Amino acid sequence: MGINNWKLEDRPREKMYVSGAASLSDSELLAILINSGTRNHSALELARELLARADNSLNRLTSLPLRRMCSIQGIGKAKAARITAALELGARAQSELQEPQMRITASSSVFRIFSPILRSLRHEECWVLFLNRANRVIDKERISVGGLSATVMDPRVIMKKAVERLACSIILVHNHPSGNPAPSEMDRRQTHLLKDAAQLLDISLLDHVIIAGDKYFSFCDEGL
Image (cartoon, rainbow, N blue to C red; front, side):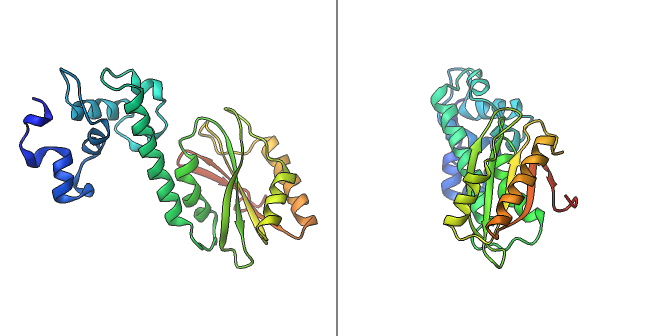
């Protein structure tokens, strides 16, 4: 039976109008994004199949490649792009909630800010968190994008951006798509290079946090 033949209160969009988005299940929210089904499957059934491809995990769905979404009959490029865009907006909103004038007191605070951005990426990205003298967030910026196993952390670029923001300290953040947060030898070398460059400008490198899925590694916590 198609969604249009359901009782009015059972249709996802109408249910949202009456009870709000929070009352909908994950599959119902996805069905609204999918919008229309096929001859044999409703939008809700397509949403359930899509979630099943991600082990019924929204976190895993954020890293599901567009081509895998499109492999489901009834989900084309336009629908896959709409779903991916909605998930990305949700991740960015979650990151922003943690950030405004937030005071960084532990590596866990850094993880809360960057986990929505980095945990599901299939490539490496390098970000810097800029702080004032009270360790409150001034800004954050992506510095570089790398491949599956490496990204470039240019101390000159990072220091230029820190000086432009009048930052007193910085925190380096990048991700490991492999799922292993342990730092590589290159990670260690680049961290020491950045620390030396920062000291020349009287800027403190407070930490280097590596995010790998739901885990992270902190150079500061490990005494490095």
